[in-house]
Length: 149
Image (cartoon, rainbow, N blue to C red; front, top):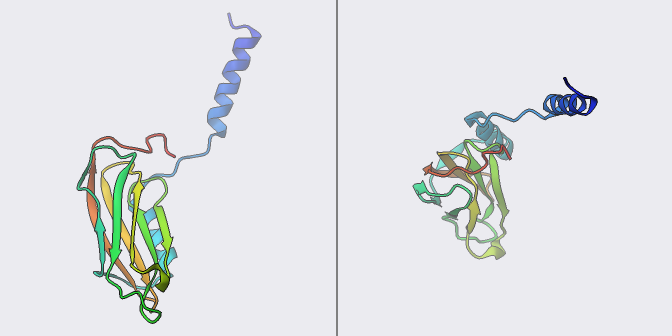
């Protein structure tokens, strides 16, 4: 026999499941949509960008990543932004960095979280309005973001 407290507990638990926000499925479409938003539909070319990331990440909670762009970093020719994008994380845009000619070099380093084995993309926006990228496949042995966030 169920008492009032047990019935209320079950009702609240069921209501919590109904009110929980749906989780987004991590797909390449999310990454492609993020690229389209960042580029405004401009073509993206391969080259000029070097993404350095381990081919095998033992722990997806912290993957050391470096992005370097071949640029003289002068007022006439410099990198405006560097973006790191994920193929299978719940949020495709992992990091964005703004640069100016005063940055000196077009290179950034950070730790990122990876939810699963996937392709990571580094995207650079140059002062002439062009976009360049590099991609690397990463095998993740211990995934991060398993809770969806």
